[in-house]
Length: 558
Picture 1: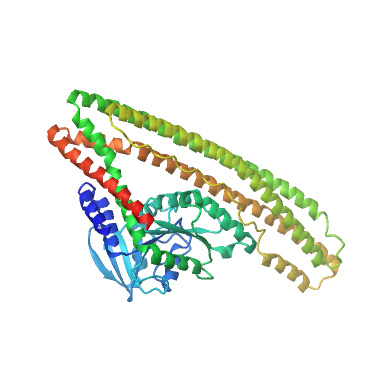
Picture 2: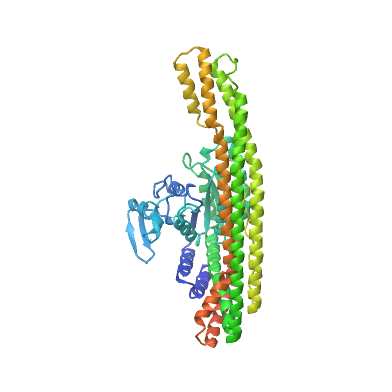
């Protein structure tokens, strides 16, 4: 089966741009050697590099408090430790592990200004079979756009995917989009829910259930969802899943993902070739008229895309304004309720002032947390409804407009173009962990009052003042955290929908743009020669797609 893939790759490679041909060569090379590639992906600051270091039981990759990784790094399981850097101009050189951070980190290589293609490290691992490749990809969604682009490059060739998300904040729409994108190539995936040490133990089951439900769409309902704190423990369940999957399906997974990658690259050029062929086939007069009609279709579609994006941004602005206003009202109501609990003085019972103060403080804490949770859930549902309505209108409207444009283009040219599926919508926001503030702050206040050995009446007055000051800062805190979670969700939702709009455009009409551009480039050449060449290319690629579909199905059945 791998030999057949190599033969198909040889047929297809000549029609691909150089950069895409490299992706195919890399995938086929691994298929022939049987090397399984595990891609670790996710948003920035989820713990991807920490996971790779844990799998190899040594600090191979830099980690930190800010988005760190700027270049994809491949670590291969081997008996010795060494490293090499490969540049985009084709150069390569051996490096020491102490040089890795300067080449792959945002601090040492911001925006990949050094034009590093990849850094490859070899190291022993007690967790993974020899030859297994683990790729640490840059986090998406950070302020560094180049990192997001590097991460997209890393997803081109992958057999198994490990999506690293955080326990809090919850899995986002951007992460679900990542999962859907990687599964166009990967044969299987697992989800690692990291940073469980940052949430209450009683909340963990709910977080895992929420994550499992959210990823079921892009990854399937049977995908492993594995909670862990990489700061305090080891990813034992993930290691077991990887080991079992590689032993049972490793060869079939490599074949399947390679066939998927090759099919993706093949189909990416087919529509463009068909459009180009039809434009050249027509007479000069007919072709010129078709080109004018197609350019008008593209212009109208661009107007539709701009209108959809503007509608989306307007919905996001209105939702953000509603959120800010609702936050102010909710905090004001909570403060008013807190003042009623505080009263003018501490209650006379219990007799010990510190005990009375603790009881009042806990009442305030419960009141603020309860009101905040109720507010978050109510407003979250309202925002979800508003944003989903806006997204559906933008997405469905643009999809319909572009589908009509694509159909019109097909009718003008007299050819068939495949339909494109609708993107997924965002998951609903989830309540974050709500905390009123560090316990140590209140304990220090109480201890100070006791240390002076003041009379109970004076301590009672002082503790009441401390409570008033503490509540003024503590009560708004959970509302601020909840608002921040909703703001992040709004931003994430809007960005995810905008990416979906761009993907709809790319899928529906990018081939039309390419075909027009290529036809214009070739218009001075003899049409008969061009048609023969294009017809051969289309025939070869059509046959390759059929054979690749058969290969994917055969690998899945193994």
